[in-house]
Length: 110
Image (cartoon, rainbow, N blue to C red):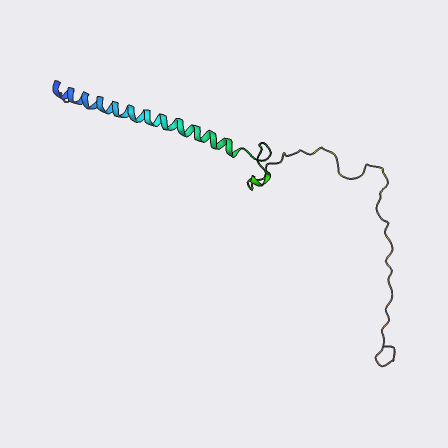
């Protein structure tokens, strides 16, 4: 381990004291800047949350983001009519098939 003289220790202590003062000033400046930025973030968040639904802005000023629709769960009911109720559909009709006859060329029927 290296032995320092009193003069060397005083020089190191003075350098460290100056470094501590400089770092303290830097920290205070950063803290002030952080306060300004936090205020800006709060202001921008409030502006971004406004739309024509929750402010006096016209609907034309809304951005192209559609508001999220609430997702409803299924009710558990089956779709369609109630069991046992008469149906309201059309009845099936039999197909009318007409027989085609072939015409001979030259018979004069064409």
